[in-house]
Amino acid sequence: MSKVIRIEEVAALIKDGATVCASALTLAGWPEEVAMAIEKRFLETSHPAGLTLVHASGIGDWKTKGTQHFAHPGMVSRWIGGHTGLAPNMAKMVIEGGCEGYCLPQGVICQLWREIAAHRPGVITKIGLGTFVDPRLEGGKMNKATTKEMVQVVHLQGEEWLLYPTFPVDVAIIRGTTADEFGNMTVDDEGALLECLPLAQAAKNSGGIVIAQVEYVAQTGSLHPKKVRVPGVLVDYIVVATPEDHWQSSATRYNPAFSGDLRVPLNDIPDMPLDERLIIARRAAMELTPGSVVNLGIGMPEGVAAVASMEGAAELLTLTTEIGSIGGIPAAGDFGMAYNVQAFVEQQAQFDWYDGGGLDQAFLGAAEVAPNGDVNVSKFKGRCVGCGGFINITQNAKKVVYCGTFTAGGLKIAVEDGKLIIKQEGKGKKYVKDVEQVTFSGKYATETKQPVLFVTERAVFELQDGVVTLTEIAPGISLETDILAQMNFVPRISPNLKLMPEGIFRPKWGGLRKILESNGTKAAAAVAELTTA
Image 1 (tube, rainbow, N blue to C red):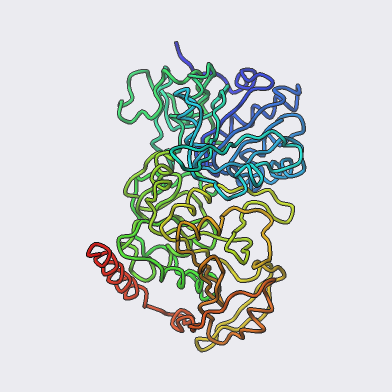
Image 2: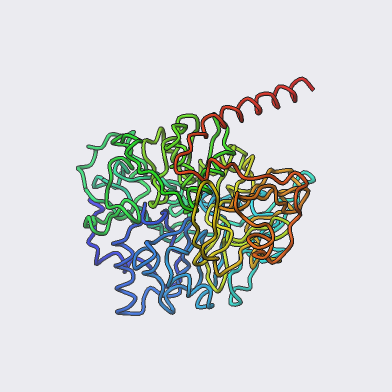
């Protein structure tokens, strides 16, 4: 019997109070047409109501799609997610207390599906210790309407861990490219594998249902079994979507390069103009080492990949994304997608690797930085953004480099003869006495002796002995006027304060490859010294 149903039938399958879970990032993996049908029924009948909505990654296009469809009073009573910044209305509802709101690390949520499927008690991990998801701080609670503790501190083998408990999944909404009539589903045209398989297993073993949105239906038995990512035994219903409601990502309907079906010449990736983004990306890229495994965050850190390509050094690195791409170049402006990927793995498996220290360097943004190295990216100025994979990535990477402008909101610079000139200062200070929310714990990083840098267009700071320390200043910049006066605290100033490399302030640089080779030599010497000792 065919499992294909009409889109009009979908929403009636979801009962009031159900826990609805999704596997998606931006619009990758997101069953937009299914979400639209659920929203339509709610607006017409006020059902389904009181839902618990759970997803690991941010879902939306910053406009009307994604979890925006659930942002109606009464439709969702509880949100549990890693990120909601891509769905402004949903974020507004969470921050204003229109529903309970728990923000948990992206990697933890996608790993929870496996624990739910196996009927284990939860994810036990060190991820989140010392951050806002630690119950001794905020327990991941994002508003005053959220009172119940979800995360627990436990002690095992003399060490401190966090327990993220499991819960039943009533409805899993997933997406693929093709399904046969029995429900066997492929993801051939998708830009990521995500975690649709463990989520489907979690729903079925909870006694729930799985709804899959696809573009095509094939005859049962006609799909190659190795291409099937979710077997039909786990799928209850299939919806065939229109192309307009089945985007590969938030910015792209379909690009064969993102699904691994086409390789593009990397020299086709446009160069960056000489502005603050390029300066920051160049200086940050100097922290790379040959052969390193790297993660780049959204926004400013994406420029590191472009610089590596521009400088002919991309082949010396393995760039990765948290949703499962390994190798290639992340697509700037289309987060989660990547060109010329060597391999795709499922998201929960990628986070297993990350959590265990698989990343050599991580480059991420920072909205606020405190004197002890605490960093906030998840909640600020009345906005509920969320942590996404930030906590997983930063906590266990061998080295973390934060990339961002020194001030926020309206900063304008110029570069003249290798010197930086501040034409207009940003309205907001990012280096503050206390961060609004602790997304990265400087104390934890100090205890684990993790190297941490903060790279801006005018200065570089290091976390040294638990203190944010100024180590470099841009040519042409005044220490008093352009740095200290633009901070809400006085940093430690290194006795070896030096100028940032003058070459990164020139239209053409060409110095990265040599620096990386030098870094590689130094790293090899350090390993040899440790081995000898």
